[in-house]
Length: 89
Image 1 (cartoon, rainbow, N blue to C red):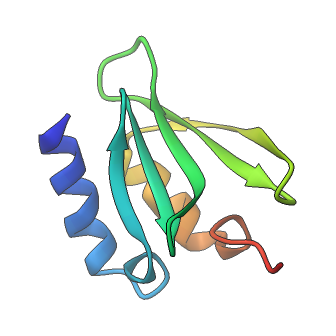
Image 2 (cartoon, helix red, strand yellow):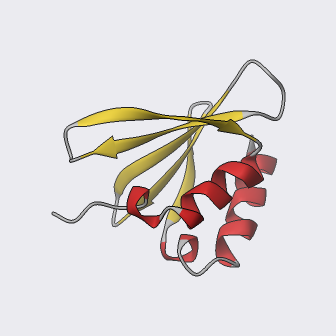
């Protein structure tokens, strides 16, 4: 899991949207956060190398995105859809 964390951090550092956020491990998930608040989770699936995503919707509940892909695909999706990255509140 540490290898996946380092890979995600490397990818995030090279992205103008994702570089603003922290990525850390929580159990078997990678969490993206800002100022100590987690707002997106990357969750391993049963298929090796594949992940699904959830984001914290309106500061109320976790909502799962209808998207499954590699770690690279998930981070690219978040970068291309910055409205999932953080809430205004």
